[in-house]
Amino acid sequence: MSESLMSQTLYFEAPGLKNTEALLKHAHNRAMELGLKKVVIASYAGRTMEEALKIFDPQELTLIAVTLAHGFAKPNESRFSEEMGKSLRERGVQVLTTTHAFSGVARGLATKHGGTYAGEIMADTLRMFGQGMKVAVEVALMAADAGLVRSDEDVVSIAGTAGGADTALVVQPANTNRCLELKVREVIAKPRQP
Image (cartoon, rainbow, N blue to C red):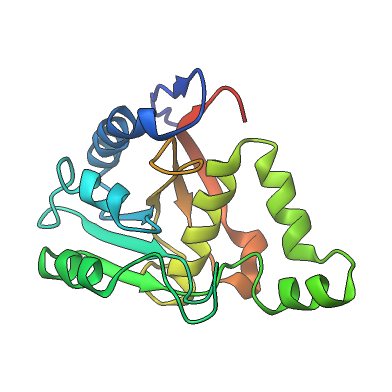
């Protein structure tokens, strides 16, 4: 007979910023219950990580902020300021700025030449569960590629829909070249409306 782990998934009526505080508290509690050591958080301008630092202690858990690549919205610009990155690093947060795992070069080619690519199909499939689900999986892949999380250790991955946080997962990360080896172990929280 196998051992059971009791967990309660938190469901929000709708996605969005208003769920951030409750999501972060619930995710923190689950990380502590499971004895996890790392938390990956999508934070494109730094506000979600600022909120996370009110709940998560970088002395007890490794916090990793995953930001958008430079040039995502406009060439040579970033929504994540150098000042924000410096402030977070000084408080013990690891900051990763990198290309989206589900886009990058393939999106550039599809934009110019048309067509669909595998990363876009994966992203759209995950969006059936909500935008936060797609981003939570994606930032776990990105953190694994940067060597900030291991593929043999579960982590909490947190993301949201149009700002803030509304989705949290326990995942076993994988590198993007082995993306189908990523395992979603638990859904800690998500919106009912994707």
